[in-house]
Amino acid sequence: MEEIKRIQQRQSRRDFLKQGSLGFGALALGNLLNPADALAKSATSGGIIPGPHFPAKAKRVIYLFQSGGPSQIETFDYKPELAKWHGQEIPDSVKGTQRNSGMVTGQSTFPLVKSIYDFKQYGQSGAWVSELFPYTSQVVDEMCIIKSMYTEAINHEPAVMFVQTGSQLSGRPSIGSWLSYGLGSDNENLPHFIVLISKGGGAQPLSSAAWGNGFLASHHQGVQFRSGKDPVLYLNNPYGVHQDDRRRALDYIKEMNEHQYGLWGDPEIHSKITQYEMAYRMQTSVPEAVEVGKEPDHVYELYGEDARKPGTYAANCLLARRLAERDVKFIQLYHMGWDQHGELPKGIKRQALSTDQATAGLIKDLKQRGLLEDTLVVWGGEFGRTSFSQGRLTKDNYGRDHHPGCFTMWMAGAGVKPGMVYGETDEFSYNVASNGVHVHDFQATLLHLMGIDHEQLTFKHQGRRYRLTDVHGHVVKDILA
Image 1 (cartoon, helix red, strand yellow):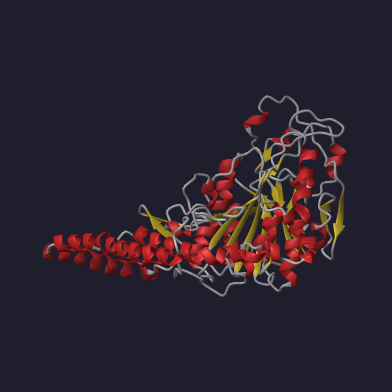
Image 2 (tube, helix red, strand yellow; image 1 turned 30 degrees about the horizontal axis):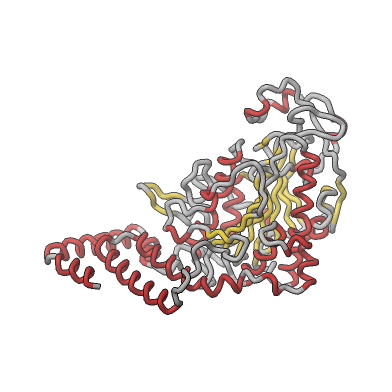
């Protein structure tokens, strides 16, 4: 406190007038150029003003990101024509339409390969689903399956960045951060944006930049919840520190930070205040939210026995439902291990076993609680896989390379048409044949369902106005309920 007084005493009348005139001038200019943006930047609670732009269909999002690139040919894109071409060379007229990764440059032959797994039609929609997903097949009438997704990146890191942030380069805000900035939160005691990562994972890395805030204020970044007794690192008080002592310390720190903000006007100072206050409230809200042990047995039967093991995909799906109940705006679940360049039949079967029941269980659980009506669930990876075999093709073994030209995602819940299959690929699942959905189109549609016009949610950084969809993207109106 004495230090604050000394700083104040060192300020001359000239300093005060100079800083005050600059502050009032900047405030006036900001209101003239962009009144909403100026008002937004004056908010310190995280409840930012830019959106919503119209009534939202969805209040929250649960994004089940399958990192590594699940093969569309073994999951939801049934291609019986591949059985006729199995083992034959992919036509140059088809192969030449897409670039391939550097991992097949030394390969001299590119035989087409059918899926080793059978497909059947399910539900009123008649959607084709692989035998790998017996539980997901039970909820196809809740899903809108988009088979005509395509992207621009061919390697994992830039492809993940592209679908999560709208740019192949690190440093841009993620979808969850944009929603936090644009909409704030409906729960003051939990973060706007929470990240869950399945334990185990796969070979390819997963960068925290995928849930970073980029150039937005730091309190918009995703907060990772971990399995174990400390879901959020450094949240608990050190041994011997009482809650009242913590409160007094935070009040004093806030007073010093407010003074610094008065001197410099740095908005990141208010972000720090926001984060400190959120951490204090989370000390009581987080333990209650992650206490899945109190769930009844019938819930575990829905998600599968893995849901009893902290950190598994199933346990994180159950936790995602609990966070959705508590109005967390954006819940991002990452599950790695879908990168099958070789031994794909065995690898993808293992992935399906660990995710299928829990994914379907989440949809059923949300619906029976009335949450699916205003919760958007998204399932998908960063790209698809090639229809030709990477490496040697044998009777019961093959691999598939990365493929940005077409892949499958699905959405369910608030605002999307249930029981719908949208878009088609060619007979080889190599190119989009109709109703292509670019990654930016997907992002624009997601924001639209949350009540945001993707062209209007912008942030000025280094002289340019940025948005999640860059200068692209169209809302896919055909899939909207």
